[in-house]
Image (tube, rainbow, N blue to C red; front, side):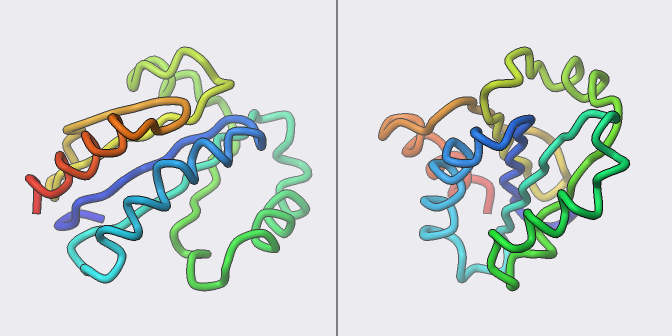
Amino acid sequence: MKGKVALVCIAFIRSAQSMVDSWAHPFEQEFGKDSRFVVYEVPMINTGWKVLSWMIDAGMRGGIPVEKHDSVVTLYGDYSGYQEALGMENTNLAHVFLLDPEGVVRWKGEGYASPETEKELLNAAMNLK
């Protein structure tokens, strides 16, 4: 990821996928063909589900195009440290972070993208390339 402008989309619940998509799809449409940009989806799943991780991962892979498999990184375990560090209080919402090529968070959003916040994200990313 270092050296690229990255959109990192984090979700704690399955129903937040449409929120993730509302950010990721416009970003991919704008920058998907440019190798300087990348999108990562990070499902964060509580420790209690780790025993079923093989089944959960297989189910998620089934709903994700093969070319995107390397862009989905599932975190199983205690994610409270990430929540606190990144200010992700509401686990019912998707959280998105735009990182510059050095890995520094330069922009963040949550929930569904609106036309205004989508434009903010794309402008912020354009200024980082």
